[in-house]
Amino acid sequence: MGLVSFYRQGSDRRHTCWAWVFLAVSYSTSAKTADLYVNGKKIASETDAEPARGHDFLMLGANPAFVQHFPSEIDDCLLYARRLTDAEILEIYEITKAEPQ
Image (cartoon, rainbow, N blue to C red; front, side, top):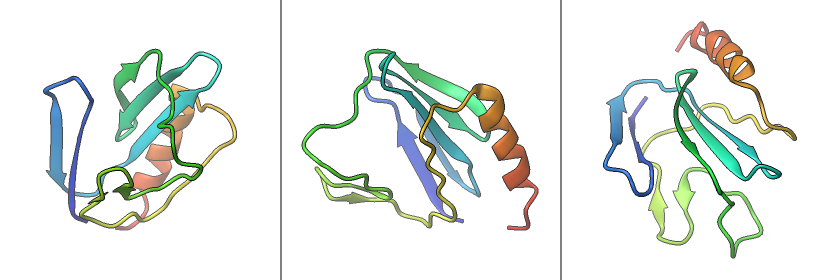
């Protein structure tokens, strides 16, 4: 467990905690929409969203453009070849939160 702090660009909402947190992002390439989930609950949606350009890789735990590193540990990482539904993300959260920390 460690500090989790994130914010939505263009928003003054900042989320910080010192506990285990389930984070998920669901992205649709065709609709160009992205949804952010915290502990199974959708907290933000972005329309006209596109992945960052200029990198041909996915980096977790750091921002390659600004050399900002995630000040904690990433326990598990799941990547899917399709957008998950709200119900599927909630189901994954319910299963993972039941595991011993």
